[in-house]
Image (cartoon, rainbow, N blue to C red; front, side, top):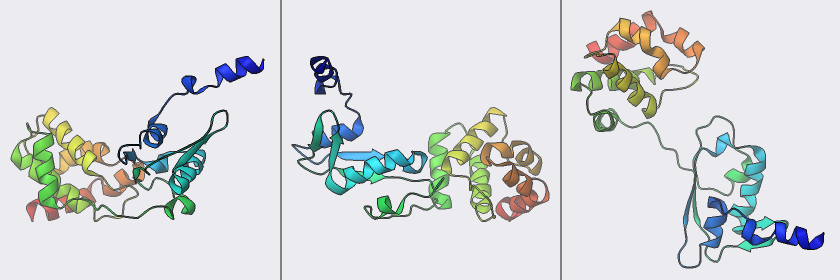
Length: 197
């Protein structure tokens, strides 16, 4: 029975996922490990990360401890969908990345949705930039700007109007309370401020 367990839990049966790869492949140069949207992981994974970030090692009960020869450069992102544990935050340097400027976001829209009319791309970007000043539960990100532009192109829209904004708000706002807060007169006011001037 012990022989069967030893064979079953040997290193050859271990699936080498990115965390383990970053530790094992650190002999030549420090690898870069991206942990995207850590706030979407469970607390057990965060606890697992504590060992990785504290000692740059991973302990596997059946195999032992694997330690990095050169600590990986670890980049962790969070979208603030939930609060990340303080112990994990203490092991990180914090850097806030804000929404892009109008010029940068407009450039992104033109690059990612090349079939969008320039006027539409400019209006969508202006509207989103102004909408981000509103008191919303979830602000639309660049992904929503791109999705909305692509949806409007698919609907053969050449320019924004208050009516088309109301009809397509669900593309950029993902919570019903936000949609209800913006639809109608508030959307028209944002439109007037952002587009009409």
